[in-house]
Image (cartoon, rainbow, N blue to C red; front, top):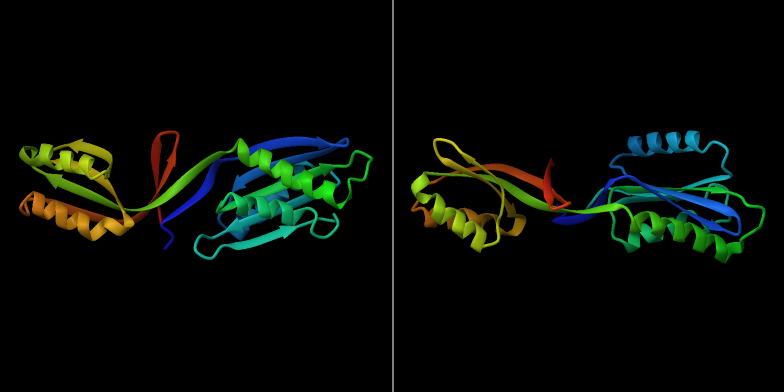
Length: 218
């Protein structure tokens, strides 16, 4: 299980012009081959009159599957530069498509590599990049008399309190870093002398973006 990975959560587009050739790069979040095919079909329809539709993608976390295409450009000058930029940013579950409208001037091998890689860098630089961290999602239920002590400990030990509900008891939804799971359970039991209900909802990914954490089931 991958404890942390980086991806994007919003599509983004960037364009550069190199000797009158337009390079339009679009980055999208994808997780399956089916999504890749659907996205690529839509991209080709949108830019139906373009000369080339280059793409590269990586899906999967622990052992990512990667693929790229030059789509008629000289071998190694288009798809691979796009993929190398994705790798350089350590992104997972993303796809970048670059459409080229030929401007009448040949760019040569080096020019193509710079243009395809450069447009990809521009798209990534302005995309909404998020970090996903593997957590155990835990509910900690305690009486009001213990809530102050428990909350203080959670904050002191830098655990993430995702939500607090004030019901018959105080319920803290806590995100526990994967390596600290056992220590956390023991800490809560010791702190409350066992007068606590711990509900373990299992593993989830917490997506960190815009100051908020969005939870995703595994």
